[in-house]
Length: 483
Ligand SMILES: [Zn+2]
Image 1 (cartoon, rainbow, N blue to C red):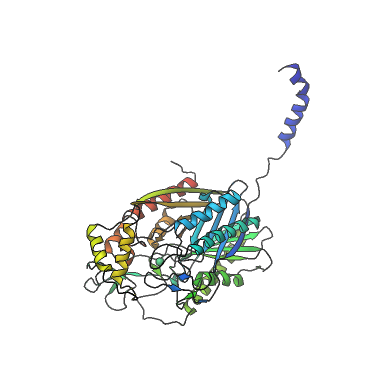
Image 2: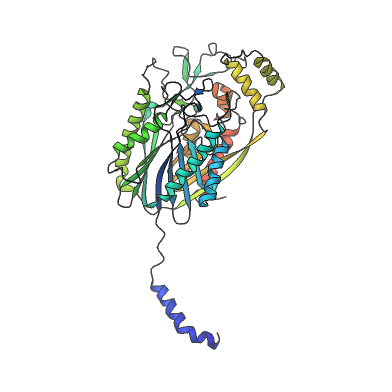
């Protein structure tokens, strides 16, 4: 220490004393925001629907939205967008994320974008019949990015609570073991499938080929004055449907988003307005139809409304239970990894069959089931040998949210919940890209629609095992149990 330094010693000591008596710097406040972006197409845009049915939009029953949440703990920002769409290909997700990186510096790993799987929206994948609508794809990416930016613009000091309820009455496994003599040959002309998706009712049904997840997760966001401004739910139900062909609708997901307004106490409509969101859990093999009972027929929209209403009721019950348990001291984190998988491309014999089958197509006639799968085989042949699949997990306080870009079976979601190091964990499927159904290796062996090679079921047979393991590793990383 020289004389120069000695001169400053009293000041230095004074500073030292002040900082020692001062309270440590307060942790920045947890902030959150919500917003929606309208993504309704104009009429005549090609709608999705099932693999066999497609056609132009002729009517709009309810407007489509990207429903967005933004989270900020002062250090880390996370965003979630739940989008009224059947499924969106990787390029749309990547474009929305590129726009967000450019506009607000948000890294792609910190953004979770997922489709609900409503089947009455414009097609956002370049598969199936007819050309994809590039203009709508660009619009969709931009609007998702807008919605997330607005959610950040609306961010305010917030409190958050989460809890799960149950709604067993609307989830049924749609894959059934059926008397093997009665299972029809697969579209490639082979017998031997043990499982039939959406089978005809009757004595031939043996048992469902997998479980269902009956949980309804509720994540509630409120201002620090305890005024609710968003509620995110998660439920594992494919979609409900009952929507007339050519009609645009967000299905029960959109109906829930509206309905839940009425049920949560203290909601008001002043800006920024309350946002309800229903995310799809793991429902690749789960729908709202109980095949063990006689068929119920509903007029259009009635069944979807009934499901939305029941789930909004359940959300209200859960919200009331967790009212006093909202937290303000929240730390955010993300774990992200991309895993490469081989594509189940057709072999020479399958390609020969596909070309022969496509030669039988009659102009102007709807394709038969074998023709659809022949077309799919030719489509798959054009795919790269390997695809990179993004996997992601968010930590919001002690809540973990996983994201998988497939139609994930209920058993995979349940296994992740069970093995998660977090008490509260749920998975959002069809997130950050689209890589088809994700049957387990065992389900692949049993066969059925979800396993037949197509651009909607393309990953190698082992993919489920690797995805499940990787997601659990991401959760361990978030829990601080890094390897
Ligand atoms: Zn599906």
